[in-house]
Amino acid sequence: MEVYQGIFVLVFLASFCSCNDDGHQSVVIETPSGPVRGYHEALHDGLYVHRFIKIPYAHPPLGDLRFKKPKPVGRWTEEQGIQEKNGPACMQEDYGYIEFKPEYTEDCLYLNIYVPGDVSRDRRLSVMLFIHGGGFVMGSAGEYNGQRLAAQGDVIVVTINYRLGLFGFLNLLDPIANGNYALWDQMAALRWVHENIEAFGGNPDSVTIFGESSGGMCVHHQTLIPANIGMFQRAISMSGVVNKQIIMNDNDLNKVLNMISDKTDCKQENKAELLMCLQKLTPTEILGIVNIYEFMTPDNYTEEMLIGPSIDGELINGQLYHTMHDRSSPETSFFRSLDFMSGTTNAEGSVLFYSLMPDFQETLNFSVEDGIPRRVLCEAIVPGLIQGLYGNRPDLSQRLCEFYTSDKGNDDQSNRALAFYGDLTMVAPSTSALIAHSRKNTAHRTYNYILSAPSPVPFEPPPPAWFRGAGHADDLYLLFDMPILPTKNRLEERHTTLSSRIIRYFTNFAKTGEPNSEELPVTWPPYDVQTREYLDFDFELSVNKDFHVDATRIFQPQLRELFQNEKQEL
Image (cartoon, rainbow, N blue to C red; front, side):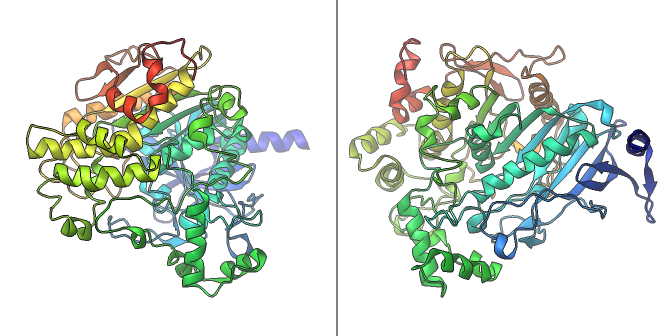
């Protein structure tokens, strides 16, 4: 009887498809978790995918599961998967940046799966699991339609939701609720994929995690968690890695606890009672506790890390930014056992021009639309950020002021101000991660890229006229079809050509750890500490070296000797 059942399941997987009453072709497959339905989606040039939307990977984190690790979803009997192209998003504030408006709910631990062509268990396709960005407070799987990446790259693409804001990171400085639930959610999604992806034709032993911005930071975090051994084999951190500011310190955590006291009736004396009280609040009340704008001063630019990963003694035991260079640690040993790619855009500091609040501009008597003057950079922006990351270092602030001063006019000075922010928060940390991974690592590959091609649909609010380059998140339209980035009638042939090339490089890497293939016009060399070469994703591809290395030497003095003497130990 067992043999008969196995034969039936294989036939069922291979052949069961139907059309709904409205004519949409669909397929139902049986997974270890239960039956799921996917829908046929025709693309172009004869390509098509099957999309499986809103598949649960954990129990809804409601009631006493709020501020707890995700509970495995177990097995279901009712068919899962919806016809709509987007599922719900996790609870978050609507900041009004985008027109895409999903349903916001705590019942959000779902993932989407895009399978190229027909669904067959025999295909053993490589898998790419995407972790979205959004500053740990916003974003969703539904914003990233993976069908083009799946179809052109012949890989299965998975996009996931995970808890955001306090729902994902509240740390009561007590084992009863010590944060990082979002990281646990991501791990739960990875385990679900590992256990179920074969039913979709995927290979659980060929999984690449990739993410952008805070999603890239999460990817890097996951590569430093040894409990993930066997869950994935490669990782791509786009515009975000573990950096100096990413781990919340006790001062930040206590500020959040004070906000809880000020804005709720939940008392701090007994942490168990505090947790129970917080679990009874409405989602809207939880969202209202932390307001980052309360800590912004009109005359100084600072960044408070009030939402994000923290040391919990389980997933994170210390400042990973430093310990990732300790090759004897289990965290770094796991990281270096993977193939790793990291890159940024060439103008990551675009984040700065829309984060300078109107009060800040009014107090310092300037307008971002007209430019960012040197005096604003040197008197407010540099000292504020350096104080938060390096402590009281007027010598460093002065050196950086001089380094980022331009004598080529207002426009160039404004872009130099953006370069300071991008180098500090993304470029230099990415270099540090690349060195930590590649140094004396002959068993696994390291690759670095820079995106220089400007986007016709900037991800952020429209940039000022003086802005130059590819801004933060301007690589996303090249990989995904995104409802928040309407590209119709705005892409030229050069954009679609670049997109096809990047998709090929990325999916080649996901399949083998080697991004190159014969049809690609430029051979992408591995990154190592002696050559430090990267592939420049411009409309004309090229190989270059040492992107913004002089800035990295200032921000990362402990790495400077490596650029001169390969034998120098970290």
